[in-house]
Length: 314
Image 1 (cartoon, helix red, strand yellow):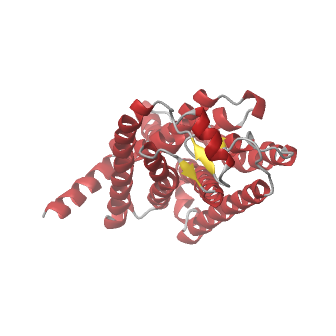
Image 2 (spheres, rainbow, N blue to C red; image 1 turned 135 degrees about the vertical axis):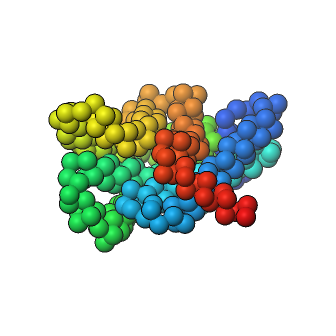
């Protein structure tokens, strides 16, 4: 799309244009093919994880309960972004309505934050299992697990609602071209000709509290786990305890590493290309890799997936 077309389009619509990953027309179809395949792998992998957990009674434990919810949230998370991105790869206008942009922003933040709270819940589960195994069934009972899930969803949706309400008060009187592949907070704020100071304050305070809280919970949990494991006399016992946390730690590093890089910097330091790559990690790559990370490192999960495959083919 040329600069003249963008200017004309921007002046005649109340919506936005999503430039996507690249404005090069020769890259649109290859990108479409790559991200369509990644999206299908994400859907298939996470659906298989959910089916395997629900079909095997041995996996009806708190850890796998949270894993199945995480897989469902990953499906929702990517579905908020990827289908629109795929459509824009094949579209000349690459447009999204103003309301569609706010809706996408709302559910992106809601599902993304729920993911972070679920990772914190899984860290708490590992903490109790390793540090207080004799009281595990009492502490991580089904009612408490459901309560943790409810709190995670409630906080995440209230957080999203606050941001979208603040965003809806802004005016966009200049360019309507979002230099991103979805309606993320920072790229949209860059387009506003209103005073965005209140949005920035909320972004650096309330968002900091909502996002950092589960991260600190994870750090505290693993600090306690490490102290407990180091007290185990045998090397085999230490390895067995740590091995139950390996998959979760890998996902945490992928998810939080990219999130911290993108969001916990001033708006003036925003970099289009670097932030697109980092955002792709936690919006597309991590949800796709999660099923592989949790299944390849887990013997019980691999056995359940084999049984599920046998049932499907029989």
